[in-house]
Length: 151
Image (tube, rainbow, N blue to C red; front, side, top):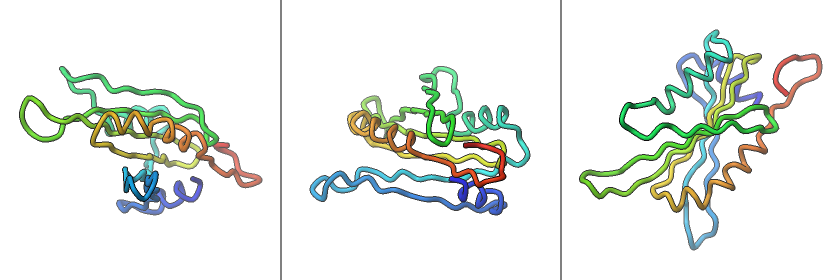
């Protein structure tokens, strides 16, 4: 995660990501890909960055379900999980899926990291949410000796 924060600061307009493919078994095939993407905070303080990034990832739209934000503690510090439902296709009876995002803000490093994954059905999302929470909980940020900042 520390290296992702360093990359975010150097990427002025570019991006660098890590991805993990979710394949429970060869018979089931690929269920999704969790992507970790660094974000340059461009001088914003941590409190402002949380609000800005939550608004970018899941803008609150009048008349739609409110975004579901859960604060989690991880090895890298505080994380916020967002769950956002979406309807695919056209018409009144459309399949409903879910986007899930985990957000870490590292104010001392001037960067944030977002982990995202989407599922085409709510059943698949519910099935894999505990595993994603476990993955997020295990994310850590190495602190080099002599440096302040996030754990």
